[in-house]
Image (cartoon, rainbow, N blue to C red; front, side, top):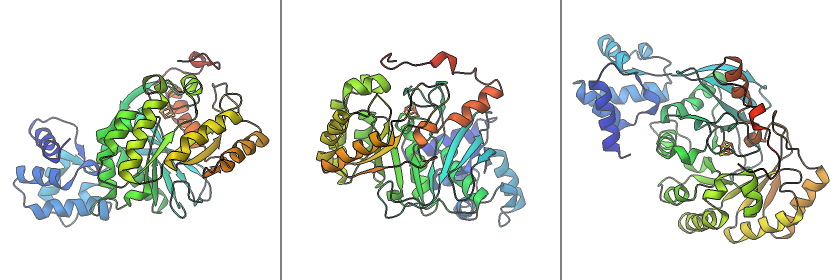
Length: 388
Ligand code: SF4
């Protein structure tokens, strides 16, 4: 969406009351300026509001003390600064912490804070990485993933994506240095909100996280990868690959039937050509599914021409799913085959880092307990080779 049409979106919201108040965390300066023009307020007031929202992190409009009281009251009718609350935190300061966030419509998403880590996504040392969600649920139905178990509910707005960072920073008192879009949902299926959130997160007037410290991970939406190759910010791209042949990928990732490896890798070549930037392949090792040495050799053939780095993640058990992790010998042999073939690869064994597999479990438990969804577990007992 262009800035102009976004601004028009704000104007429409202001004119056609009653509408739910818009979150200031999802608004860009031109949008806010348009709203203030419509309210007959000078432009410098819009700049003050942005500063209160992002730099001073005001938790409410009432607290924006440099604004006249009448303006604060008028703003409070149209805008809010928070739309979600932290329902639960698991983990401790030195370990991976999971935050269960309750959205304004009563649904839940998870966001995961990972402590200092050796360069998972290309930086020298990835300190305090936050793994954010982009959708409530997921339509892509990867067979090893808890996030897709109850299907897709809705896209998150740009504001809801940005607020995950704001909530975690406020709760912990720590800055988030790196972001990975690897939580619940397929980020590229929510393209406009995710890219708008990235612009806000990157902007100096916004959250101020460097573009190179943000990684979008996709299950392989080839057309959106081509589109993202023209996105102006130098974000990183990771591919949730998890299978090095169509045969294996078809069995565990239904998206591969729509965008098979040939189409995916043609899009990745475009990305590589335009961005001159290394890609990351995520590869969850699942026993007797994708852990053979043939898969390792096929993976090396895919990774080498693109100079892609491979992150191997031993599968972490998800309640209700039948998969298991391979033995450590098998994991080491797989890694060894990649390294021998000249591919840069790492193996992450630490519990809690296997985000892609484990993400979505807290939310499933909470929404099932509240009766928002029926328990999806019995309906999705999957057997290898059964497909989607
Ligand atoms: S791995 Fe990602 S794309 Fe696949 S079902 Fe889970 S959240 Fe969706």
